[in-house]
Every structure is written in structure tokens, then in C-alpha cells.
Image 1 (cartoon, rainbow, N blue to C red):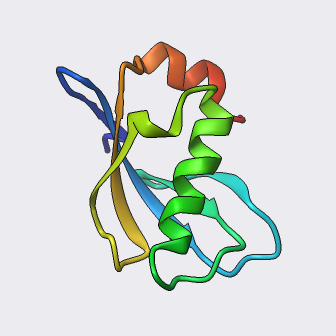
Image 2 (image 1 turned 180 degrees about the vertical axis):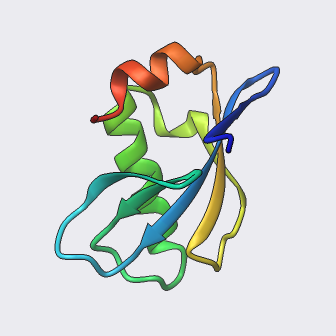
Length: 95
């Protein structure tokens, strides 16, 4: 079960997003997906932008390096993060 995939540009990570949560938080791995809770509503891209902001803050990178590549209207999403290595991801994600 691959949690992420290395690409020429960085890493692709599969997410399980729970919008409308009481607070923004990375809940940890749920199988092969990283579970993320955001307080933003799932409307007009608000939850997607909240996911990008939370990932950028957690990983200490600019949010413009994070692209949503699949699942714009689904709770199951895929993001590609430019210039991030497996080692960086492991070191920066909460355990």
C-alpha cells in the first residue's frame, strides 16, 4: 500500500478530507490516504484551499507548491507537492 508516489517534480499524496470539522488538523494516515480535517465548508473551493494552507503550514513550504490534481469535489483528493522528498515528508508530518 503506497502512501505517496515520487514524481520528477516531488511527491503525489492521496488525501481523505473531512470538511466542516471543529478545527484544522492532520489526523494521520488512514490506510494509504492522509486524513485531513478542515473547518472550511465544502463549497466554492473553500475546503480545498484550506487543505493547501494546512499542508503548506505543516510542511513549511509555500502553498503555491501544492497542486490539487484529482478530487476537487470529492473528499478523496490527490495533491502533488513540488520539491518535497520522502525524507522531508516523514520529518515534517506529525507522527
